[in-house]
Image 1 (cartoon, one colour):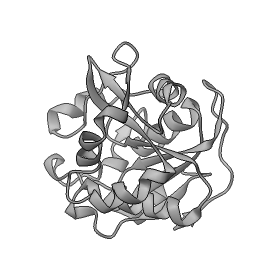
Image 2 (tube, helix red, strand yellow):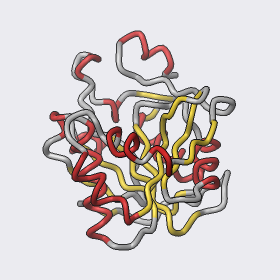
Image 3 (cartoon, one colour):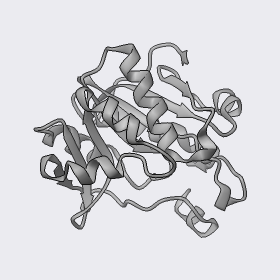
Image 4 (tube, one colour):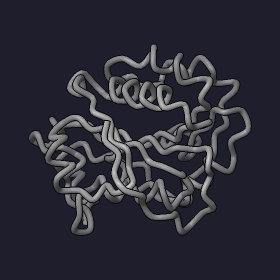
Length: 209
C-alpha cells in the first residue's frame, strides 16, 4: 500500500470527514483489447484521475484506489497525489477481489466510519451523484439509482465491511449482500444528474473525450 502527499479539497460539496472514497480501478479491459481501464484517456489524462476527482469534489475526505492491471504504469502516469493505493494481485479473478482488497485495507487502517465505493469505468457519474448518496445515508447502506435501478456509487458503514468482503468473490462484488439487505438499503435517484454507462466495449470509448 502506498500513500502520497496531501491532495486537493473537494469544491462542489462539504467534505465528509468520516467517509472515504474507495475507487475500484484494477480492471485489465479484456473486452477493450487488454487496455487497462485506469489508463484510458479522458480529457487528456488517465481515466483514474477523473474518477478520483469526482470522489473528492463529491465530498469524500480521502480516496483509496485499488490497482491491479498495469499497476506500476498507473502509478507512473497518473497523478494520484493524496490517494492511498492498494494493490490487488488477484485482480484478474474479477471485481469482487478488488472490493475485498479495498475493504480489508480500510478495516486494517481503522480510521473511517463509511466507505463510498465507485468504479473507474463510469465517467458519466459525477460529483453531484456522490454528494447525493453521501447526504441521503440513514442506515449505513445507500446506493445511487438510475430510473429506480440500483447502481454506483454505493455507501457502506464500517460495521458492514467484513461481511461484504467475505462475500465478494469473482465479479459479484457486493451484489449478494445488497440483495440480502435490500430492506435496509436507501436508494437515491441520480438519473437526472448522472449517466451510469460503463466503458466495457470498444464502442463505449466514444463516451471518452
